[in-house]
Length: 292
Ligand SMILES: Cc1ncc(COP(=O)(O)OP(=O)(O)O)c(N)n1
Ligand SMILES: Cc1ncsc1CCOP(=O)(O)O
Ligand SMILES: [Mg+2]
Image 1 (cartoon, rainbow, N blue to C red):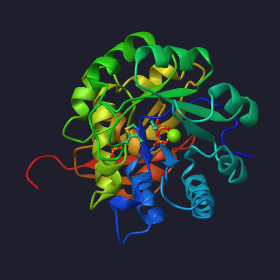
Image 2: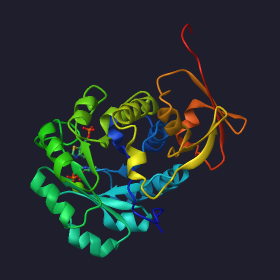
Image 3: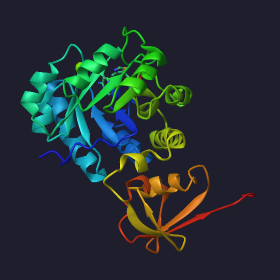
Image 4: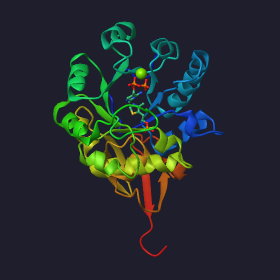
């Protein structure tokens, strides 16, 4: 079975594989770095490998994403998604139709649809897509020959689309603030993340920007979730943070030097985004002020 028992899609940072961007490094290592940095959802996309290789990578990614409690989406191949027990598929305008995909996948699996105009976005929403891709926002070598939709479509999507939409295409740390300002609260990147020397650091930086733009997002969306009771620096409180990293962001400490102790044990920085916050957790967030 896929891991998502409900399809409540709660993500900000979507990472897609792109092995051509990291010669000499394994796809699993690079994606694990992205997960350590806080990527919330992973897509396996490989337009050149044999079906057998994609199948094997799907199984490896399924194991990895399961360890991090993160959904796995397979690009294009419904049969591989089912076989690898992925959480869903991503399909483009020229791929299998949404109706046929839903028939094959059933109601519980996630279906994401690429859209390049507000008309396509509204059609995918009406047809039962779980999320839509909005892009490419900027021209990108990862999808050569596809015209950019620009931030105008991001703005239209923010005004009119009621299911989650994710901005994709040429998004970097240099332009993500513009994309967020246009109305995106979720972004997806390939080359900027998997081509980086330090994918974890790039993901942390993306998450900090997304969180700075919408610090209340999870509180607003979590209408059926009153939060986890925790004690932070001796103060009892409820938090919607799912991980140590999210808690740090909620306390606006993401850009500070912080030492974290959870139930008396130090949590090293590399583990912040994969360390869950549990009910009753005692957390010490020690940050250093000024000087060095
Ligand atoms: C999140 C997301 N958005 C868009 C795409 C592109 O899908 P598609 O248009 O089918 O193109 P290919 O990826 O198959 O080349 C995507 N994969 N993911
Ligand atoms: C698959 C896809 N679909 C629209 S843009 C894109 C590629 C995004 O890659 P990058 O983040 O490297 O521009
Ligand atoms: Mg496709």
